[in-house]
Length: 379
Image (cartoon, rainbow, N blue to C red):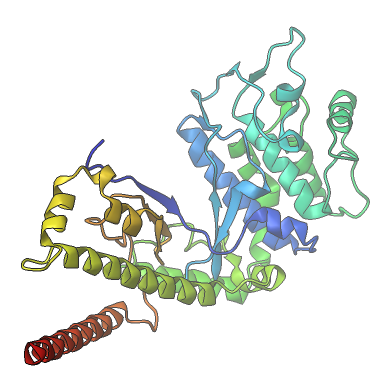
């Protein structure tokens, strides 16, 4: 429709994904694995509480984000394209959808009548596969071919690797990867398992984790509304340092680069608007053309298309990404969260740019006056 601007807001994650972490084949400490899985399962608990089944939980859809200066990592569940709405404690007919190595047996094999019946426990199975990968660096089946996966499902045998010594960990894995969904844990049951609630958990809380929780609590008391109850809980904190070293990513430096990109985008956008305004300047030789352009439908304005026909992207520190599509000259990118905090001062940059433009215009006017006087003398 005419005059409608399309804006897409997406949560921003600056530390890659769980899939990137799994691909490094790094041996993570059990406390780190525990915190990662606790965050993931808690996110699924909140979804299931609202009657939402994700149906495509995998490493690529679990994003990592570290709020600048926080020293901790927040997991973000992404890609809700296959989400199914279902009432709690019920099963329903489902389509076979998802990523095969992470799909539950009831989705791949169906029941005895060939029907695909499932519930929220399909997400628990997928999460169990991720937990198995975090510990073993492989899938519980030999290869990722459909034949190998089907054989694994038919045999209903989950072999315990020799290097998994933690009995509580293995018990949780078997409960999450129960082939019969009736015997499989729910998300709530998984979070109540001794692997997450046993005495050993509290003995693993380091001084660093306690400090990060205290910093978050202090920020909350000082008015930071972005701090959640999970940021202040030592049980949910995944320290940034270890994961950052493994992934070789520096979110603070990336944040500064993104702030710089915002400035460049705003400057370019302002240049395009100034050029368009020159066409409409009263008394200029192109004023009639400018009036014609303004009277034309927007989708037929050639100059406008040329200036704003590309995608403008503005990325903000507050975890939001804003895309403004064509026909957006009246819609400036807005920071829907907190204002950027970096060494770059965008307003100062814009003032400097405007001053340079004014000086350039003055020089052009002076040159035009000189040329006009010379022409009169020649006449």
